[in-house]
Image (cartoon, rainbow, N blue to C red; front, side):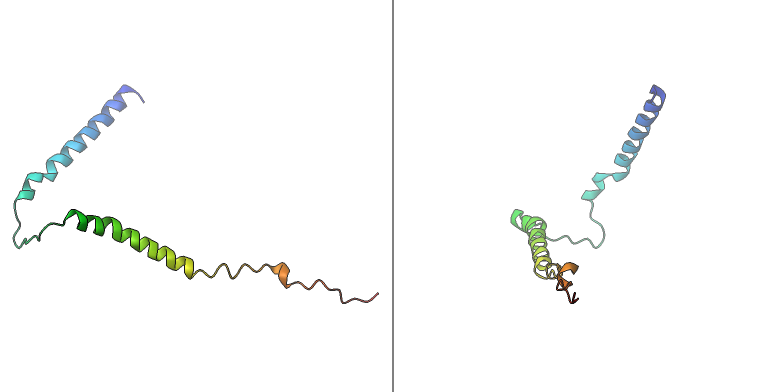
Length: 91
């Protein structure tokens, strides 16, 4: 990649980043909207329980159900177990 393309890519990335920062305007977050009625915030324990512990428990429950209700172990019957090896021919 030559210098001209690198400079163009850098300018595009910088311009895009600058436009995103200017358009986001975090200062407007302090202004309440009409009908806005926020509740009280979550404590640290409530946040950890909601976003860490609850998904882990849900994952363990789903994994346990899949392992318990899995029927593929019962279907491991090969076709060779159905073959009768006793010869019925007489010489």
